[in-house]
Image 1: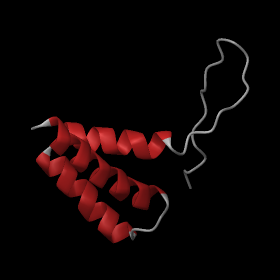
Image 2: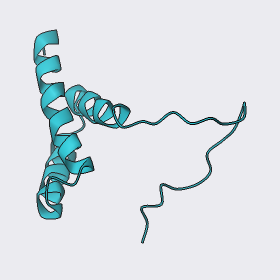
Image 3: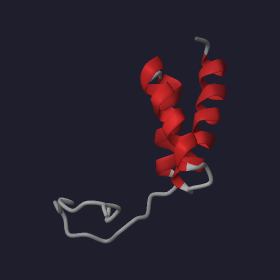
Image 4: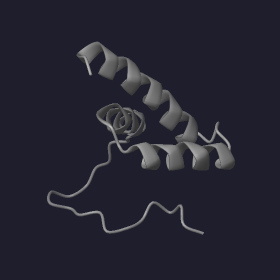
Length: 77
């Protein structure tokens, strides 16, 4: 895979994961997407796209030096 192809595909997967994270893609469509990714394998563009979607949503926090996060995201029901 050429570098330009990886970037283009990564951007495509970033849009997909952004839609999933922002709940703009239905649960049933999300399930289909994730099952297909799992079936095909986690390629470099998939990994990069997911990472970039998450990194754009990161928030900086003030925490003590050497603090460790031992809590969940709060998303469990």
